[in-house]
Image (tube, rainbow, N blue to C red):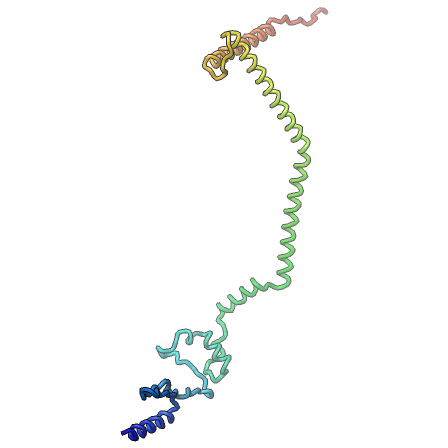
Length: 226
């Protein structure tokens, strides 16, 4: 029985070695392990005839049916691609678009020189306008400084007069009420309102008297003696 088992094992090993498999035998359990037994067939490459996709077939991808792919085929295989060179030439609309893009991104030298001249002219005009504004402002500067100083002096004068008037009103309130009054109190505000009314009446009265005096002045008659 042992000899028969060895003979069967040897036959099996010969058959597997013919297919170039990698085997391993477990000496303790007598188990045969096959780790690789795939023998792929070589790929047949057609290096003589070009691949021309069938545009009428539904299995052909859409990108292989485009004019761009036809141009690649013609550039690779030439007349063997079966593509007419005239079909690769752009149409009138496409040609106009290509020319327009070419003129936009790569204009002729004369156009570039005109654009540079126009841009320099605009920059010169902006610079002259800015210089004119600066010169005008510089000419106005002495008057602006004098006006600013006059306004500053007038503001100081008004603040000084307001401070003096406020101190006078506080002194009058102290004399009238017999004690120092808070300038925010109703008594003080009421007193200020009364004083302002009296001042307005005095001003009106003075204007009326001045007008009456001017009307009452005698008019010197002209010398009528002959």
